[in-house]
Length: 508
Image (cartoon, rainbow, N blue to C red):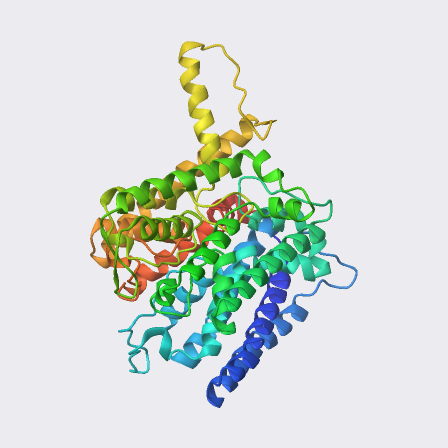
């Protein structure tokens, strides 16, 4: 791996992060934060801009030399680029709200990976001795905006964004694109990677603007509308309220956010084709149909299980489990967990065992390939089901030839082997992280297991001590760092990060 070339590109990413932090300064001023907060935001923006600029020029290719980006450089840029983004992006949390470094890094990585796990709660004691008595209400609005913006940047991908705006990344762009875009295969819309990145980001921006407008039109403040839309389309889950979306107690808001969470869990290539006048492409895509059917089945079954029960909302209210309320809360929570968004309107930890178990199952599956969702992806699960069915049939017909197809395209042995190995690695890492989290925090296995899958699948809330109304603030620093690694692994589809631990990766 050409370390100098990798450092050169990461330097550009750091500069971009700095300018996005700088964009929070006018928001902080408009939201009437103190002048000290505004100045500190500006300083924390200048630090990555200056550091990135110095590093960028120090690592420039020598005269007559031109960097070549191969597979190793692609993996290195994506993995270390995300770590660098979190390292510089956490500075405002440390210098403005006195977060301890591990809490700040956890919160920022959770934002960029669109996990949504948070350490901010009503009893969080910060490094300076100050206690947050009102959770998010005590955090400056400029910092809350940056927190939500990390979701939006990480949703479609920091490197994919860079491919769209930095021309020199066109060299070796395919490796960077494939290493970051989620899904077992990366759909490319045009022969030029930069153009594909611009199209994906264009659709992303359009959907974000549409949701923000609809929420603002329904009475949500413009600030909350933008932050909520960032979290929705990125399938992140950071809210401006401590009680998440349930704090608004609005059927209209719940409905709009549910629809856009579902859209965010779809392959964005399908959205692009629909905007080009081909909406039927949705129903020609096997993965989308599978995703839609699972959403409907989960919503209907959980609705039935909630009928006649008492539903506790995230802000502590108790509502009766009427048909309407059961549909409302079931649909929202299924969309939120299935797409790995992590917004909450109800304390689903108190729901019937069937409902909570089904939600945990959905955590493993996640969104569609090419979406902003996490998890194993519907396409992989669908292929695993087809492959398993094929193997059962071979018990009767041992000499039959496997003919597994997805969207009429025959899947080769290499693709199936990659899907199988991904499934094995995901489950293996889930078990390892669960055991280590339980040990480091001395906690129950339900908390440890759901915290692990919530971070590895980039979901956010789990069950028990990390449930819908809880945070990760009580965990030990070592456990937080462990789960931060799980977030990065999940967002970059395991292979991109795991390949770096191979000795052969670093050999020339």
